[in-house]
Image (tube, rainbow, N blue to C red):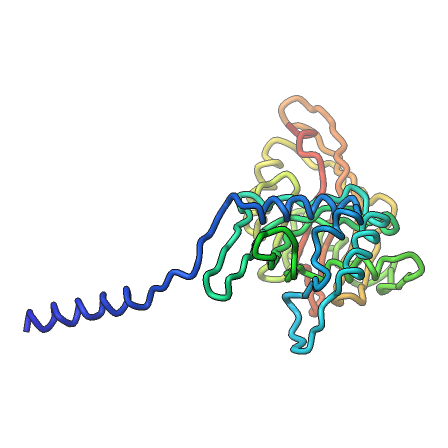
Length: 309
């Protein structure tokens, strides 16, 4: 029985090894990588002469995320025109390695092909809209056998980012909901605050959803309701809140996009330190998001905690 198990194990290992077949070599230094680095610089600067030399006349660029089985690709001259567009419409344009990744050149035996694969970041700011690109891109380049020209480019990029730029283009003004200066959700924010100030924590808590999240710019991580109350108790062990004053008036924004519901409010906390009676006024901005049932499910708090240090 032992011999049978040994034989089966040997055959299994042999089977795994027999399935391996070397089909080329991977390089981290290669003329093809140098070609792609030069190509990126030529694309950024819209150097048409260099691009013309680097791109084969049969060149096509493809969207690697497209499900179109009949995708014809972008031919050489059109692609070079895209380079001109980027130079004329994007400030601070740069393409860099997406560290710690680096490009690979692969020389395949099967088909006798040379490919370069890159993992990069593209950065730039659109001149017309101020929209910023700062995103990863993955590209595959098929090269001639001597790695002197680019035959094809397959691009894997989140094109939704480009769509947001086009949506922001001048002339594409779009309304995104309604702003209210009086609304029941504004009332809920006020009632929650003033219940808390007057020591009625239970009533204040009732305006928040059970899983409400609190994000304070002074804290390293989001908090739940119990954690924010514990944090506040530490502050109020050293300071008395003598007055909470509304500044201006809150806005309730009912967005069309994603159907978000947010109350923006501005406040002044008038504080007095218990140890020496020092008075301090603390400006606070609050952003409260509401769920469908009218409960606050996310609160973001902007204030300068060092005023109470």
